[in-house]
Image (tube, rainbow, N blue to C red; front, side, top):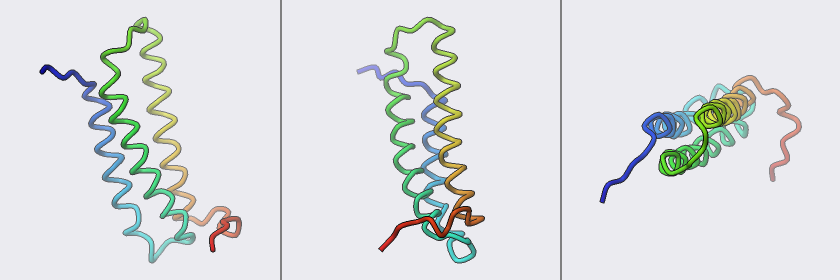
Length: 101
């Protein structure tokens, strides 16, 4: 079988997975530890999203301009979500708003 995949999405997924795994290391020094737990989980789940897009991206039949816009949108949205959650955990933005039992 000949598998085709988008290498940039695959590499980004691996980096996202690694960042998600390493996020809880900073936990003892973080202002909101539950935020780092969320960054950990988001990193793992969004890495799977990157892997799924790496697999299906070559099969999509979109115009070139639409594919570039979609690629940029995916990168910005997925990475902004993880970085934002990580920074919330590190700096404790809204740490009183977490509902955890």
